[in-house]
Length: 195
Image 1 (cartoon, rainbow, N blue to C red):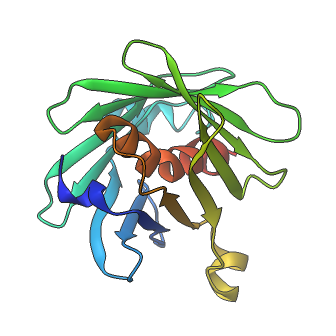
Image 2 (cartoon, rainbow, N blue to C red):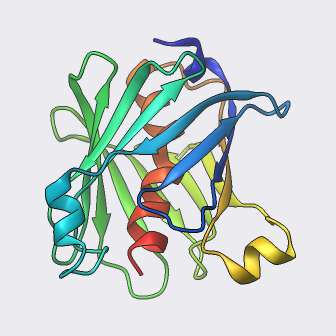
């Protein structure tokens, strides 16, 4: 596992651009040091489909990169009509799990599955979809995702968001740490970028 995932706090700050062709995020640790990035990769076909279909339906691919620019994890979603399912891959490209969106009227909810399809955690958001609690199968909190204030101009005039992901230090399973660290970017792509 890359040392990137040994952090317990990740601040994921979406970059803003005048003409945004793809989503990009800078990632910082709890001390404010930049530790990597998350970059969306859009194929030519995805760009063309974007002219005709809503972003909320379109597939996406996010690459999590360390400071050397090496891909250390990847998130992929296929074409979707209603509920999203995002596959999670490790740095070798092997599947390690997935996020599955669940139907919920007021508060967004996701399940985190391992690579065998077994539910290992639940992700529940507040009614604003800004703050999320992540609990394991036993109901113990293993992490949180909280939306952070991004400044007046950025909040009012852009769709760029900033999140803090906190992982309990007791969480030692490598694949689960990778998945929990990825939660904010997946949620942002599913709930915010697609709306």
